Image (cartoon, rainbow over all chains, first blue to last red; front, side):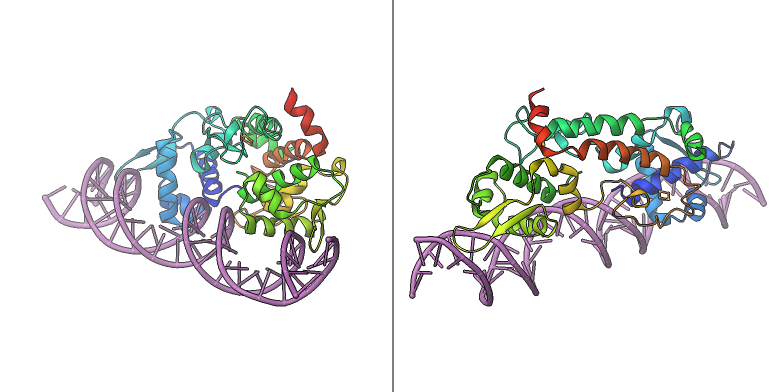
Amino acid sequence: MLSKKAKYAIKTILFLQDHPELVPISAKAIADREHIPYKFLENILRDLKSHQLVKSIRGAEGGYALAKDPSQISIAQVMRAMDGPIALIPCISERFYESCAECEDEETCRIRRLFSEVRTEMVEILERPITTLAQEAKK
Amino acid sequence: MLSKKAKYAIKTILFLQDHPELVPISAKAIADREHIPYKFLENILRDLKSHQLVKSIRGAEGGYALAKDPSQISIAQVMRAMDGPIALIPCISERFYESCAECEDEETCRIRRLFSEVRTEMVEILERPITTLAQEAKK
DNA sequence: TATAATTCCTATCTTTTTTATAGGATTAAT
DNA sequence: ATTAATCCTATAAAAAAGATAGGAATTATA
Ligand code: FES
Ligand code: FES
């Protein structure tokens, strides 16, 4: 299951997408509107920033904005930044690969291919730009 | 990510599938061969049994065997028995539905449909009978 | 230039989940 | 009887998730 952190992060990204104003949005404003614990959100925003998903403006009247065009941002990117791999087992992850401690050999592993297929399908959907979500929701 | 418990459970199920002998297989034998902590495996087997995935024979020379034909068992069933929902968010789970505390309204939720689609694809693959895994592995 | 609003940083705490173990009661084959 | 096993309840240990605390640094603006 998605962590709360990831879900908060997604809501934050979508909130910023909805407010492409000239002025940046403060963490406080996001926390209030999306009901996210303020200090927790600060941590999330720092992670989002370090992953180049949001940018920040410091000081009074400062805040956050998307770091790139929404057409270049996907839910998968946010999930990876917060929770790590999309894949359900580490040995098939593209970006977070680790060998499976429990399995003797990847080549002969009985479940590896199955989970690889699962990952491929998940990524295909989750990599869609967030700009496609509005349409999705209206279907 | 898949929990160790679920992974151990899958290995157990596949091990039992490979040993359709007349005699049941003891937890000790499985633990030794699959390198699963014995007492942890006992718990797992109890869960697998309560979900009708394995059956047991008590007493000396007792042990475990699959509760049904392998063609009727899927990785999805094992995952659900161990870790709960396949879905990444609770509001789209068929068997473990819960409303999302963080979302105001399911109908207007921007990510619900996307994750629903993800779930559908995951389930389609993970529901395949374990008898198809051997072929998978040889591809 | 003082103030207020804000990001930034490090650290800690609390709760929940995961992983694993302990000890013994019960069952059944030999 | 003995032994090898399942079965059951409980607990412990470790890790992860979720949340909070306190304050330093930055910047607009009054
Ligand atoms: S699941 Fe990764 S090698 Fe088997
Ligand atoms: S994700 Fe479940 S209602 Fe929004």
